[in-house]
Length: 153
Image (tube, rainbow, N blue to C red):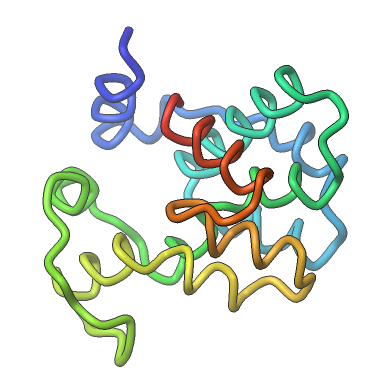
């Protein structure tokens, strides 16, 4: 099944998602583990898939890159997504500023557009935060690698 179709189906059936949390928790220090476990299970599943692909393609990946791959969508955890919001925000993202964070559908659009910014602010490790921030607009080699693998999952 194509990845985007799979993610569309999971938007409506989150109970089908079974992220490999044990895999992720092997790499994350306690504070980041708490952030990871607070993420939507669909985003945790996606983060684990990106991290596993990163390690398969680049076994030499530094720990900061693996942690960033796991947490790259942590900024989406600022608010829950309803299924229709997940779909709508994936199709369209109006140019809204990151702050102030709004409620309702406008807030969903903001979180979708600015989740790298929000996520980078949530993580204390500067290397991990930098890679989270750049996962949609990479500036470093590891940022480019995470971006490519994120797009392929």
